[in-house]
Image (cartoon, rainbow, N blue to C red):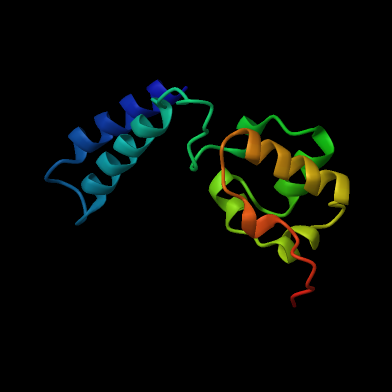
Length: 123
């Protein structure tokens, strides 16, 4: 489906070239380029996942995955932006789920010190 969408976007950009509102052709080409980048992912190097990849790549349990997705976090980068307090405030995120997230991120080679509870309660 990605390839078909990329081809369609490029075809629309060609058809509209010169006959489109300002920026539409450029937007279509940029969208096609971005889809191409996303569909051609580099393989993981030395067990480290690229930051922009989806959280599915961490192979979390269903409960942990669902908690994180329902909180609106879709990428590893989004997960790494959280701190320990915000991670613990995710609905239905138990200490076991938090521990799993930390273990998976560490196993993938990420520095997740900001996710580890330092004993203080921030608000």
